[in-house]
Image (cartoon, rainbow, N blue to C red; front, top):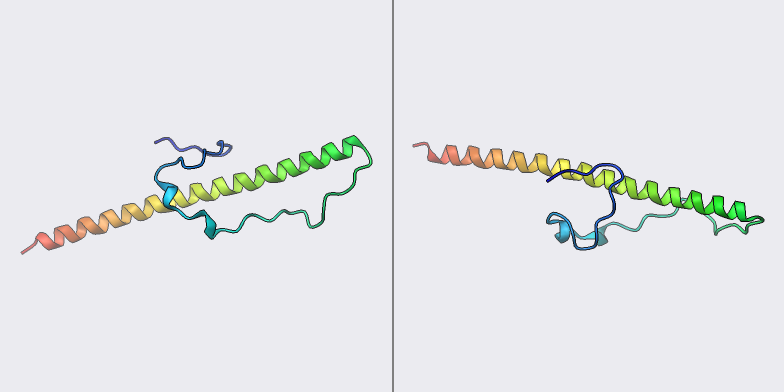
Length: 97
């Protein structure tokens, strides 16, 4: 399966490579970096800039999640390789008289 890196689109709910058993409820929703309610805008341009800044923050948060998922997939693959190696070692050890 081909790995997708930065900027990959979000997968539809329920799709993926066997990851549907993972509990997503363990992780709290990300908190907004904005500590106060949206400001009242004097001009349309100010409102548009604010919305653009918020969109960028959301995209960065999503990319951070994808980067972490990629990292976890690599760690999982490494662990699976070690488990396989240990299982093969056990099989060889059990076959010796």
